[in-house]
Length: 406
Image (cartoon, rainbow, N blue to C red; front, side, top):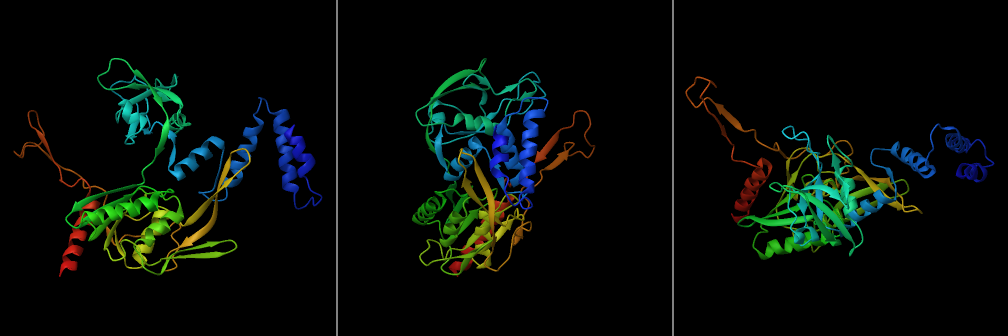
């Protein structure tokens, strides 16, 4: 029995130092032998490891093999799948007997899901015959079903789909393929004004960002850049540093202070956009590596920040592989901006604060001043601004463009 093994081999001669480990071995053995129901030995140990790491800080965690594999795949940005993401199912008050099936939120271009004809908002009622929901509740969360859709390239998975207008769900047999989660989007906003959005920082982000900047320059849209970091939760710090290097010729990008050492990352000459004025969009979802990038650009006077205060995550996590495929995501350092500021629990206050949306103006009563009575109509006058933060950024970009042309 594993508890006996721990007791026999882990209890040290220095009883004082390892008394707590002895107590743990005793507790494990007692649970195994005396708890009223059968227990899974591995799960007990996983739960113990999870509790140990969880209490260190909000960002450190122990991950069992399946969750750790998915996290590493997300970080790498490439894995075997059918190429879609799901959103959680919701109960419909108008159709209470319909289970809250998860729906398709996004389909990657060229993926098996797109080739098969799946569509955004299709409902996934079953995967390989296992129902995803029953009346009144989801059976697993959307992320768990996405994991089930992943697998080795060339393997098959059957997805049963319900679409509006179909009488019955239809099965689709799809062959998984290697797909890449895009982290960078770019487009031309106006003459001379480019737009670059980074969703997260994975292994290909800096290369994709460089390609996007080159494309915008070829299109004549890199005189001013709107850099969208909203809802970017971070990711690989080294990728954020490489992106920042595209905008800076010299100086500190970030300082990373660990238990044993301090590392300073500095910019190098030769970036693709070192003279391009930048308007950076940030919000409460801008965190970690994205905050490193935003702070570096502002501290060096290279960007004006627009939006809402950022999340405030000033620590660095490192992945550690464990023997059975599980892993640790452990906080190993704190990072500081070029001006020496820590962002932990503080975030970055933007230069121009703009709400995420503009409330609609509602005029009730048909304009006769009599209020909303029988026979009156209600008219919603929309503001006409779908994204006030982006609208403000474009205005500032145009001002920068005019200033540069004088």
